[in-house]
Image 1 (cartoon, rainbow, N blue to C red):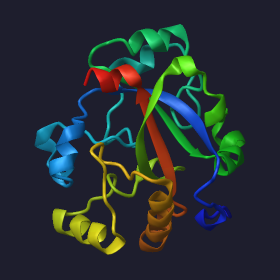
Image 2: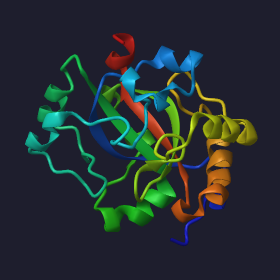
Image 3: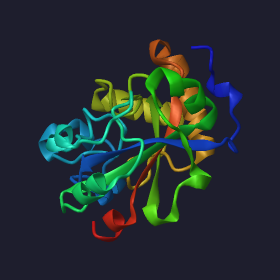
Image 4: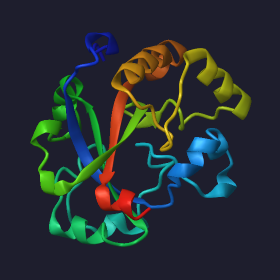
Length: 207
């Protein structure tokens, strides 16, 4: 892939690359006190990440008739998806990446990028923060690799990474910087990109 994170500035345009239905077992307050406890799988507390091996999709997703794109995400929110999202244990999630990259991947992955400014207001999405991902594999630099607790703590200190209470990077400036740093650290998965994570507002209000 010839695309590189250095092509972006902090004012870059962003587009939704799809929606998903994930389990609501994310404990946002949990991450404000202990950033490294996702390493203990016994907690059953999932960080907000695009990686569906870390933040699981609902079990009956395969029964939904709506077609998924190449990222295994839904391009549109139809009535069936909205109905599933009403379940108390389910969160409706949206993911965005840089528009420039999304447009370049649209034909390969069969996605229909939706510029953030055109997302209907009735979707009522609330922004949580940025994951740092290899979008082709949907691996998260923070959550998908087998870091030990000491390793991830050292990495966070070295790269000056501070996570918000959702376990994500807060600002676009920091997300761009950290993406570039992970390109050097894990070159086989570069380019890493900021991946914005959004959920339905009701999920925040009722958490």
